[in-house]
Amino acid sequence: MNGKEGRLTLTKWLGLLPALTVLAVLFAGALVFAAVQSFGHAPQYGVTEFPTLKYYRGVLGDDGFWVSLGITFYYALVPTVLGGALSLALALSLSRRFRGKALALFLYRIPMVVPYLVGVSLAILLFANGGLFARLFHALGVIATPADFPRLIQTSGGVGIMMVYLWKQVPFMTAMLYANLIVIGRQPEEAATLLGASPWQTFRHVTLPRLMPALVGSTLIVFAFNFGAFEVPFILGAGYPNTLTVEAWRLFDNPDYSQRPAAMAIVCLLTLISAVCVLLYLMLSRRFDRTVGRAA
Amino acid sequence: MIGKLAPWQRILLLFFLFVIAGPFLPVAVASFAFRWGWPDLLPSIWWWERRDAAPFPLGWDYIFDPVSRVVPALGNTLLIAGLVTLIALALSIPAARTLARHRFRGRSGIELFLTFPLIVPEIAVGIGMLFIFISLGLYGSLWAVVLAHLVPVLPYMIRVLIPVYRELDAGLLEQAALLGAGRRQTFFHVELPLIAPGALAAALFSVVISTNIFLLTFYMGRGQIDTLATLLFSKVSGGGALDPVAAGLTLIICIPGFLFLALSHRIIRENVFSDGIDNS
Image (cartoon, rainbow over all chains, first blue to last red; front, side, top):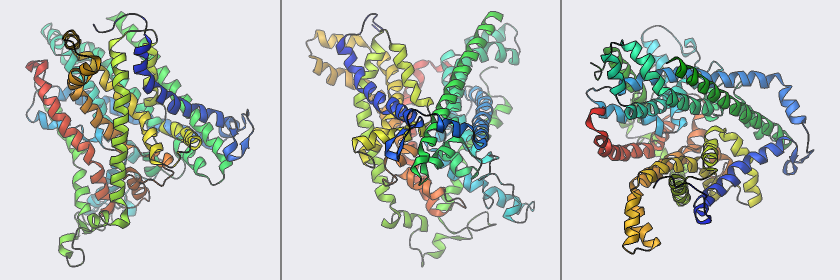
């Protein structure tokens, strides 16, 4: 019954049509508008130079863009890699049998369902220079004044930003990996153990290859999200340099509306770079799959 | 043996759970503080020690005061989330049904298209979308916010509902038809009750997503439509310490998510044994 082959009749298309229309108009339409404006067609803002590459040239010729791009990659990549490794360890632990498992399964999902802004609040409370960690170090006699505490938020170092990402995203990646572990079941691992494989060998040659698709999928989503995230770097990052999203927000927010096409150019480049990264990653992981498949 | 937790795993799990849930405790404390300055690890004055000055905890008093606009923002948040969820359900159910039941040319293309909104930066969609709403004359209205929220919500909801339809026993629908039920009757009396648990989970998820969106709300609402997310944003983007009001707002905005967890946990727990007891 599932998956009848064949052409889609009109009545069936009617089911898809409303949702696809909404997304085509609002999502695809929005991207088209952004692209058109980045090429100089924004009469609302008094810009009618279509087609021009002026704004792209301006953006790409600015050193600030490249610094921001580096920062964007840095904030996006580090938590993705760290979080992926951490999630793998956590998902494997969660899949074991232990007391209090129901509670653990309930608690670890909390960050997934609250906004990033909640993570921002927690980061301010804990990592600000007058925050709880600074006070703890004061109580221990390590520092004397708030100024002695290293700056973790509102700097371009990004510790606070990446902490929020990890707090929100490790549970998400863990959940995706854990769901996969449950589906796979224990039999292949048990078989490997019975055949004399060490725990490490079992992990490396049995568990990890089977988790690879879920690991690739979840890190992909997390990376793409971090690459285009706004609130967290805006609040917890430095005034300058900051991510490309924050730069785009500033240009768009400028009282001089003729700056807006430059903001559009930035978000178009951001989307393009993000898409290229996602595609490259998918291609690499496919290739890795094939080589591993051949070796095994 | 394989199923048991190694000692390092136990420590890792405990640390992980502590890091996740632990920070909520000081937030709750902050919302009840009267004075909590450097370098005190706990508030030096709790609100109940100053009941003469503040009959109600300061943060919460302000939150429920008309000046703070939190109560109307809560109303807006719920109204927007409710409208988004209703529209998204109406659009997603037929879409998911078609995608789950029929294999046709272009299906994988459509499924790919449905993942794009998860990957494209929100700000790119947001500032591009402004023009659509300006030309529709909706810019700054509640409807603009609702329609904008559909972009991240619809792909998620369709993805959640496809497996629901895959697991639906189509035989039951055929039996209903054989027994002489009309299309409408079959849909409302057989199909809808069968997908109801899945649709409920999808609806709750949609409420959570909608509640959490800041950027699209801010842009489409022209900064004029307050929701909990926009209020919390302006509260914490000032920097500095977390005051009792910000702490209270932080807790309130978590409520939909906590409700979702509590409810979905119940649904999930019933299903846990259906995959066999040996899986855990």
